[in-house]
Amino acid sequence: MPGLQVISSYRRRWLLKDVIAGVVLTTLLVPQGMAYAELAGLPPITGLYTSILCLLGYAVFGPSRILVLGPDSSLGPMIAATILPLMAADGDPKRAIALASMLAIMVAAIMILAAVAKLGFIADLISKPTMIGYMNGLALTILIGQLPKLFGFKVSADNLIGEVTGFVKGLSHGEAVAAAAMVGIAGIVLILVLQRWLPKVPAVLIMVVLAIASTSVFDLAGHGVSLVGVLPKGFPPLTIPSVHLADLGLLFAGALGIALVSLADTISTASAFAARTGQEVRGNGEMIGIGAANLAAGLFQGFPVSTSGSRTAVAERSGAKTQLTGVIGAALIILMIVLVPGLFRNLPQPALAAVVITASLSLADIPATARLWRQRKVEFLLSITAFLGVALLGVLPGIAIAVGLSILNVFRRAWWPYDTVLGRVDGLEGYHDIHSYPDARHLPGLVIYRFDAPLFFANAKTFRDEVRRLARADPPPIWIVIAAEPVTDVDTTASDVLEDLDETLNAAGISLVFAELKDPVRHKIERYGLTRTIDPHHFFPTIEAAIAAFRDETGAQWTAGRPADGQAAPGQTAADSAPPNRIPAGPPAG
Image (cartoon, rainbow, N blue to C red; front, side):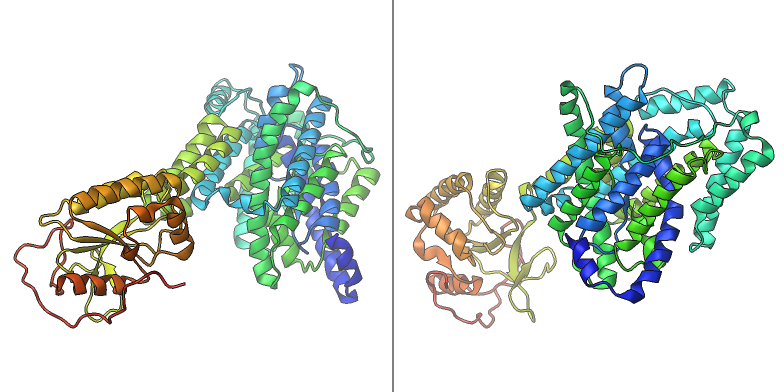
């Protein structure tokens, strides 16, 4: 329990800073907690229950000293997408709370089991380009979904296109409430202006206070604006959520997606703030902390939570030193719902929509998307595909698409890796890519080929086809030397392909030679029995050693200009040069 360790090393001078940071943090936790609860399709009070319990749970079990967990805008649509299909036609709030609580408990179980199995690396399953696309899609989904609430009416739709259509129809049919739209739009403008020009001012709190005041001054309720109303008084009891057995499958699928997004978000946020304080991020420890926070929330009528970069930044700027900041925040929220549950009764619902919309804008990263377009078109397309998956198919299919695309991108790079022919460049040590150095010299009869990936079932035929292409040069090479340092593995499928390839080359009078092959890979090749076909003397510790052996055998001299597609460049004449340092041929060094 890292929290208990903090107590034993706590310093008195930290107390005032932690208390002040806790008070400041509470002003953000309350309105955001209520807004994100409604985003998840739940009563606003559940956002406060969730904030309290997750702060306490992480304070005890979380390894980071200032990380702040709580209801999150990125998880809200995922929670709603999971529980809404399981809701009865009457939309019973109690059933919604039970489903969301069970979802939080499942997320906790996934996190804790993954931590025990030391699977913290799974946070890397979503690449940055696909995460950018996913977050952009999520931002658009949240924004469109909150527009009807911002304008004072409701839309029932299952997808983004339906929500856009319903919103446009609502506007055209005069369902919008002018007073609600004015409050909501003014709230968005106020938050964005304060965040831009006065970043240290609690923009959300100021907007909420002004919105509550405007309810009384302008009689917003009398003008058709919906209000939050009086929150239930008191603290929820320990509750084991009751759900139907048939619901567990869909809940578990949603929990997996939420756990993955929550973990990736937490690891990235924890890493960013740990770098500032000199701490180290422990992925498995973070999973235990997230699991404890979700378990605590789920047992007290809460819903799944994640890390908030914005709330963590507020805590840090306010001087937070330890998890006591979160404990202070939780205590203040408890006092509020126990002593003054009516504090936010006059808060307009469009003001909560403004909070959610401004949060959604922070999720989108358009500059990063533009940078992908400039720097790497393939990753830009991956990002756009993830974006379209979220926007058109939904949040949960979107996260599945994002993970799938990340994995496929890794597979694509291994399937079609970069490969090239190497040559000798005057004034540079070693052997270099002839695409980068067109004037690199070569030895007639010898091709040095580099394949930048392990050889396995998916790319073995790609490797074979390229070597065959090099062998069809006119005149054909005598040796094809594989610069094998990037080849970190050879599986059994690739072994069979190499055996067939070597027999084909031998029949054409061409030798397949390996240089710089790593010892573990060489041992696998020997275990596969490949040395029955490939001459054991054709394994060299370095490219220099292979070239020295070839020159001893053929007397070839370095020739100016590079071969084109394995063929000697026309019009080139031999130009002798000093041979490279001689290294005796033989088996690879240990």
